[in-house]
Image (cartoon, rainbow, N blue to C red):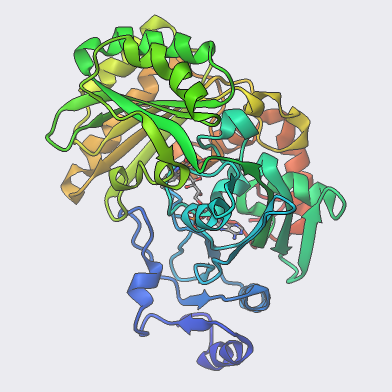
Length: 459
Ligand SMILES: Cc1cc2nc3c(=O)[nH]c(=O)nc-3n(C[C@H](O)[C@H](O)[C@H](O)COP(=O)(O)OP(=O)(O)OC[C@H]3O[C@@H](n4cnc5c(N)ncnc54)[C@H](O)[C@@H]3O)c2cc1C
């Protein structure tokens, strides 16, 4: 190892409850692997933490030895920020405990828990909070960037439901952030991503959800996509906050390109069935799966469509609106998808997310009605350029309909996205305040493998 003596690693090992993996260790290659198969990085040291004291020891070790630090929650970040080359990877995948307190309608999740872990424990009591659409996305990364899910229109973003976060700062201190304790830090954790420290646990407000919800999808051939999307856009605009919705361009298992409309009604089953009737009656779909469905199953509906290990490249923007020419553009780009694994998603926002006080969290895009996510996904390295080009062209074609904002959790690398995209993700009006917070909690930019807010004077 170039920068750290083995004796120092041995001393760290004695301090830990968890384990250390070096490039020669069994399990090292498995541990450095993350969701995006494009990312192939080799940390000098991986610390697999099992508790906050391990995180403190790892942070102090990284700081003392001037190591680049990467933090792994669920490992889903498309830019690959969970793993670094040559530095220290602090892996929280051993900290997945979730403890629900049904009487208080609260739950606490470890810094490496996934949404599958969270939903399993909270649905025991018919409770949930807004979480990601895929069961193995990390609670940590998703919440720290905002957190969009089926319940966003009912209950806001994941970060809007935070009660407190326990965090290890760059100084190696374990502090609590909440409305009462370190409220400035608490604000920064609601959308400021991993800039301010390593979260060891998250406490959330829960809500009664399900366990059965009326939910499902309808599929249509691309020939009818324009009229179906116009109808869906208008239908969602007139729907109550209980309805979460998404339109996606994808490919069926037998190879047919389709438009999928997904709806999840967070309320009474018969109300849901009635609410969704005009959508399901509009045109004869190729398939209609709407039915009473367990919430935990809904939370896995997309799992198979975005498997780990494929090569992924994303582009994204919030949209100001979806006029008919915007829909025609997105349909035309959907027809050009270079591989069947490529997708385009249109997420429908609004509802409780839009009503949450804008100044109460970093997340700044509450006025945006739609979020566009272009997913380049493919298997072979020799298809890299074709897929990246398609995603970039699609994003470019949709710019006339886009706002300046972008969801921080869908951003790629700064070198690819350009220097202005990170301030655009955090919001121009909030960036100055975030710089001040970064200076206070991480003045040397120890935590920089993220959508980084560099403190003044830091490299
Ligand atoms: C298949 C898939 C589905 C997705 N679905 C959704 C969705 O439905 N809704 C949505 O809003 N987003 C979604 N996302 C985006 C997701 O929110 C981001 O990729 C997020 O970064 C994932 O968090 P993670 O913990 O899994 O990632 P990781 O790659 O482990 O972490 C990402 C970054 O978060 C920070 N981080 C992680 N853990 C911690 C911690 N404990 N403390 C401090 N910082 C930490 C670090 O900076 C790290 O670099 C999805 C992503 C994928 C790949």
